[in-house]
Image (cartoon, rainbow, N blue to C red; front, side, top):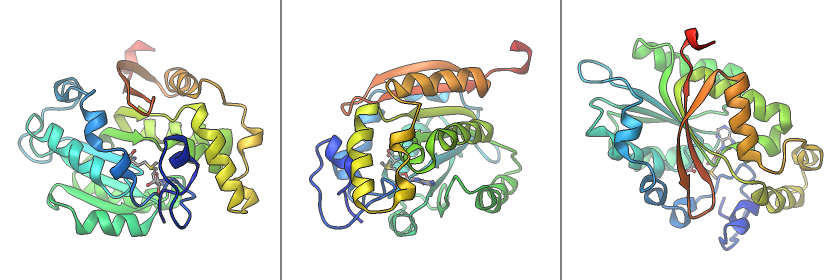
Amino acid sequence: MTASIGEAKAVGLKPENGAAPYGNFTNYYRFNPPGERLRLIPAADLAAELPAGGGGAGPLALDVGCNSGDFSVAMYKHLCELKQNLKVLGCDIDADLIQRATESNPYPESILYVTLDIMDPASREAVLKPYLDKWHCTSFDICFCMSVTMWIHLHHGDKGLLDFLLCVSGLCKTLLIEPQPWKCYRSAARRLRKLGESKFDHFKTLSIKGDVAQKIQQFLITDCNMELVHCFGNTNWDRSLLLFKKRSSNQG
Ligand SMILES: C[S@@+](CC[C@H](N)C(=O)[O-])C[C@H]1O[C@@H](n2cnc3c(N)ncnc32)[C@H](O)[C@@H]1O
């Protein structure tokens, strides 16, 4: 699988051979290096939202749709000096990408990669619960959800996107999310249709459209008990980087 799909076109990647129906581009980080985002995200701002770390298990991070792991590693390096014993679990639907991420993992004691379709509740339970149990935790301190929402939305429709947001916000205390803007959807949807699987064709019936990032933000606030704590600005792919955290229960 290579960067041949609509998202690649939308951001100017050259199509190569093969398909990447889930955004599972093999050369994604050649075109979207993690540093382009991290330069917008001061480590101290992120670290301030995480528990201290130190003694035993440090903060736990979940990177949803981690692709070949480059962002997981870069984010780990970005935070590990401020957050001792930080642990990162990267998951992706694509087993080949997970194998690559695992083989090139420079920090196997701190970063683990697993194959997981985050939309499958049984697999989530089978994969995430044992990991949390191992660290005596019931949730992740932070979840990274970078350029994944569009793929979930196109494959699972409006309800799938909202279920996904409920799911990830339920899994973590803090959420860093980078939604794709609507302009990416058109070419991605066209490409998915060309792959010939009508089940991918949610695009025409989506009612969450237009300012998708704003709608995601609104849903996280009104339905997921989260509040926006930072907007780190827009990447050079024109995607906003939004940091949310769980509202404390006495805030209603
Ligand atoms: C465009 S890439 C983004 C990679 C990475 N999050 C980043 O931006 O640095 C989207 C990734 O989400 C993964 N993905 C899509 N649907 C998924 C799902 N249901 N469960 C887990 N991963 C998924 C794809 O395989 C792909 O690697």
